[in-house]
Length: 239
Image (cartoon, rainbow, N blue to C red; front, side, top):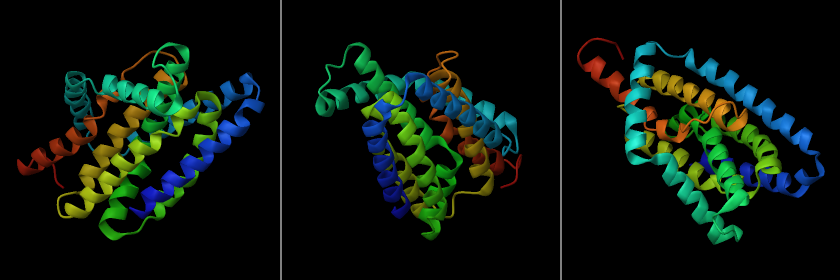
């Protein structure tokens, strides 16, 4: 969990700096920074997808995960959670443009900070061996991203630390408890699915090309390794 707490600290520092000094940046500069982050996020997503050993597993994970996410209305729940946090801590009403900005900042930062390859690999490494070096590198990157996000998307970015604590910390704890169950093939397909979700996030929230309920695809991160386990059990794919 050391890496997770370090990550939370850098996001808070970077986000606070973004809130304090972001207003001094012209709107066109902030828009360009967000667009740059969007392009970089899409590029990282493409790179992550190439880690797959079987694209059909990624497709299956996305389809099944997307159906489960729509059934559970995950993105709606995240939006409602963001609105609750705004009303409770940011003095918002939960309605109007300011609310949408808070929720967008919360959702965008949460997904960017929690879907990347370093989140998966770093959390597993931290849980399995106690080595948090990957999460330390991720923390530095997230700190700079939080500064840029907060300057444009506001205080909602800071509340993404709750998702970081639950998701990233949860992965580390699960890895510690399930050391013998996680194979390299499972990690590869989880990473590839995460890459597709990052591309969706870039298209939807950062580049604003087409609205996509990316949050509803989050179950795919669990479905993909389950598919790998089933295929391995039936001898279709090696571990």
